[in-house]
Amino acid sequence: MGRGRILVAGGGGIAAYKLPELVRALRGAGHEVRCMLTPAAANFVSALSLGAVSGAPVRQSLLDPGEEGEIGHIELADWADLIVVAPATADLMARMAQGLADDLVTTVLLASRAPVLIAPAMNVHMWEHAATQANLAVLEARGIARVGPEAGELACGWEGLGRMADPETIADEAERLLGAKSLAGERVLITAGGTREPIDAVRAITNRSSGKMGYALAAEAAARGAEVVLVSAPTALRCPAGVRRVSVQTALEMHAAVRDEIAEVGVAICCAAVADFRPAQASERKIKKEDLAPGEGLLLELVPNPDILAEISRDRGARVVVGFAAESHDVVAAARRKLARKGCDLLVANDISREDAGFETDENAVLLVSPTGDVEELPLLPKREVARRVLDRVAKLRDTHGETESS
Ligand code: PMT
Image (tube, rainbow, N blue to C red):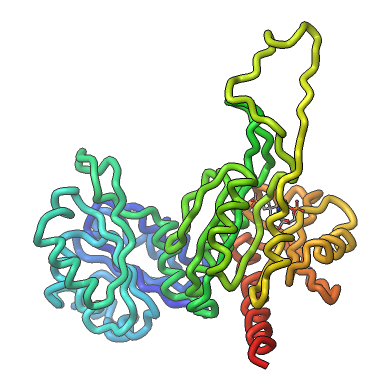
């Protein structure tokens, strides 16, 4: 069985063409997925392609004996751990708000006790219409969760709120609603990305961190019920659903942002690649070759940056603090030395000599090193799965810290 059973209810809007992508994202996260479509949705996406990507027959009709024979509509309603309505059109939202059961989708929604997530998509004026907003208020008052709509250019030609959230965002939100809430009520701070230390108005010292590992940790911590603040150096990534992002550029800015937030958090994970040094003086203007004598080199004086991880480990009290390490050789010995120097509760060590892991890749291979010297070696895994393993360890550490505190 998968990690969760998700029933995708497709509504009749142009955004339904993104449903195969949504199904792929949900299955990629390890969930079992089934789909059902309104009659209108079947005009925008084929049951054949959804059946192929979901690996299960797609239900479309309430009164079809063949379909009911495969899996009855009440069975389908009971099967789901979560129902994702995407796209939630104005019409479908209205019918849900009214409690109608005039087709398969609305009937299953009415018969199910599973939580429901809607991803609205429609013309901006339909979205803003008092009737739609009133229906939305009814649905939200019933506890239905919502992701989007987002602003942008709409299929109808208008600009504004009405685009369906992208499939990955919907999948993240579904994950968050379904996730094992092992970090419920916990406040978690995560640093991510590579800091950027300016040399002049256009140049900077930075590194290859894409932020993917830190963002995967943030998405997973949010999925487990934590309140997450992500202190992020520049990246091209979107902020995961349910996460508060504080954007910074330099190590000094990251240090200040972490200091602002740290008193409130119970878990801190330093995944960012922070520059150890910064130019002593950044020129506000672009440094020009012509300003130097012909053949003259340019000397940069570098000064040390604060060590954020060492500082928060020193003052951690009952807080769980996790560090990362990028090592190119003698990984275990170097990681043990780094853990002792930084004083954190767990060190996640990357062997960055591997081309398939560490910086920029979608997968990572890490060692989890404890202060006792114990080492757990994880195989090459998607960064989201590495995040799960790290957070499993965090949840255990938090429980042990809690016991020590109360004894
Ligand atoms: O972002 P990706 O492309 O997904 O790549 C992920 C990653 C390889 C960047 C990540 O998995 C990782 O290993 N991050 C730590 C990289 C690093 O800078 O390691 P380090 O050995 O220099 O630092 C050790 C630890 O001290 C880290 O937790 C770092 O955040 C922290 N540190 C370092 C210097 C400093 N001034 N302050 C810090 O807090």
